[in-house]
Length: 462
Ligand SMILES: *Cc1c(COP(=O)(O)O)cnc(C)c1O
Image 1: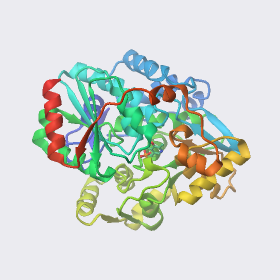
Image 2: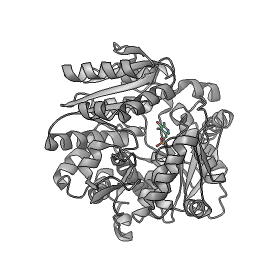
Image 3: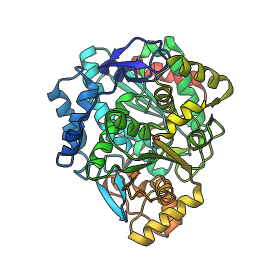
Image 4: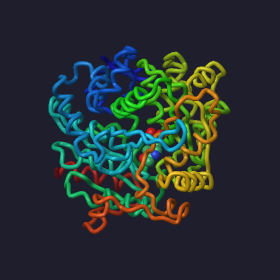
C-alpha cells in the first residue's frame, strides 16, 4: 500500500514514511493510492469482534507491510488498554433510533485520543526502524495538544512542542497539557490567538531549512494515520444496525467526518454523513452554497471547532474531483491568494452524494444540551451538542438509525454545561488529580523567530 499526494507532485511513499512526514512535500495531503475493500460479510462480522480486533482488520489494510501483524496488534492493545470504557466507542440510545457514539473515554477525554494513542505508538515504532529523531510541532485550541502530549510524552528520540493561545483555553485544557511529567514535552503559551499560534506553526513548516534541520513533523489531522484510526469506529457502529446509519459529526478541521468518507470508500454503507458546524460555518457554507471561503474565526462554546480553514476538505475535494490533482493544486493556489474556492457544479454534486451540512450557533448549542438533559438526565458537551442540534433537524422519514459522534466529555467544558442545565459535570478522577499538579510552560510573544530559537535550543540540548 502506497500513499500519494492530493497535489500530485510528491513521490509515493509507504505508510510508515507517510506517518513520519505528516504533510506531503508538495504541500498536499496524503491518501492511499487506492482504497482497500472490505466485504459485506467481513463488515457484518464486526458486530461480534472487539474494538481492537476491528481496528486490526481495518488498519492492516491501510498499513500494508510497514508493520507486521503482531506489531500492529501489540500497539492497538496497548493504545486502548488505558480507556475507561473497554468498548472504546460505545453507542448510547438517547431517543428513538437516535444514538450517541461516545468517543471520549481515553486519557484526555476527547475523541482525539482514539487516533493519537495508536498513532503515537506506531510513530515511535516507525522512528526506531528508520533511525534518527523527530520534532513534533502543533498549535492547539485545546484538545489536540493534550491528546498529542498524552500519546507522545516520554517517547525516545521525539521532542514535542505545543503552542496554545495564552488565556484562551479552558483551565482544564491548559492543565491537561502543562502538568505532564515528561521532559520531552515543551508547552508554549503564545501571547495571541489560536490563529497567531497556527500561523507560527505554518511558517516554521514552510521554513524548509529549519524543518529539515530539526526533522519537523505534524500529528494533527493532516496526518492520514489519524484518519485511518478514526475510520474504525464508523465500522464498529454500522455493524450494530441492520440498516445503513446516518452519521452526524461535529466538525472543525473536517478530519473526523472525512474518516467517515474513508470508511465508505472502503465499502461501508452509510446513508449520509452530516457535517455539523458551530457559528464558524466554513464547511456548512461550502457544502450548501458551493463557496469555500475563510473568514475570521469567532469564539464559541465549542472551541475545538472554532476553525476557519478546514484542512481535510482538500482530501474530500480530491476525491470529488475524481482524483484530479491538477484541479486541487490550482484550487489551493487560488485559495492561498483569495482565501476562497468556488466549487464547480460537478464537484458540488459529487460531495452532495454523501454529505449534508448545517451550522448551529451558541444558543442552539445550549438548547441541545438542555434538551438532552431534560429528556434523558445525561450531560453532553457543547461539541456533541452541535451534533445533536443537527440531528434534531434531520428529515427522519427513512427511519435510518442516527449516530451522533460524541467528541468530548462534558467535564472538559463545565461553563457551557452549567449555563445550559444549572449543573456542573463531576470531574473524572484523572482530571481531578491534575487540578493540583505543578504546571510547566513558557510564555512567549507571537513571534516566529523566538519560537524557532526556542525549538532549536531544546532540540540541540535533547
Ligand atoms: C477536534 C474536535 C472536533 C472537530 O474534529 P475535526 O476532525 O477537526 O473536524 C470536534 N469536537 C471536539 C471535542 C474536538 O476536540
